[in-house]
Image (tube, rainbow, N blue to C red; front, side):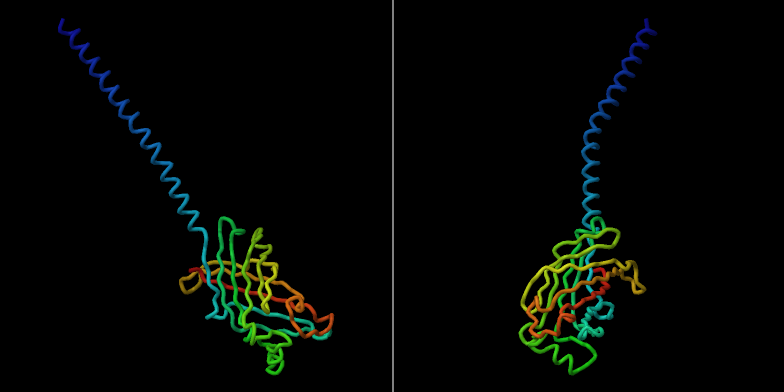
Amino acid sequence: MKKPSLLLASTVALFTLFACSKAATTDAAPSDAKTMPEKATTMVKEVVSGEVENYTLDIKGAHAFVQFKVKHLGYSWLHGRFNDFDGEFTYDTANPNNSTISVTIDTTSVDSNHAERDKHLRSDDFLQVESFSEATFKSTSVNLVDGKGTVTGDFTFLGMTKPLTLQVQEIGHGEDPWGGYRRGFTGSTSFVMQDFGVKKGLGPNSAEVFIELDIEGIRQ
């Protein structure tokens, strides 16, 4: 009689232990199942928010340029640049088309390597700097594939704002020797000067001005 009782007691004990162990596992599962997706969602949000990079143009190091050229009477090219400008851009590494750029140009800083000509360019015949000392470009849409494409934005010049599209290409990106991180692009566009109210006409062969924008940004 003692042996069956002992066997029965052992069986009951094992069953009870198994049941308790299973209940504990079942109770823990919902908590873990709820916690892991929350952790994953948090990690995804952190990664996504960290992919939008902010850059300022390297003006101090003179690693950015705004240059122009226009035909002189249709016989040759006249080249110039704007020495003073500033800007910033963002770059979304997950979705480059979500990037933006904004540039402000001081038109009084026009430099065509000829003092008398620059004085004329600043006059009311051309840049009208006493009334409009700045030109700005602010992007409204970006279309990049493998680092090439277009950037369209609002270009304000001589008090008029019109859409303008640049053909752009990424030059490169990476760490610099001073512990920073840089990204650079080149862009080009053109427009008819009199469309923005330039008063002086230089003939049909010189109506269009071509702009080249080379920028190197330092990640903030």
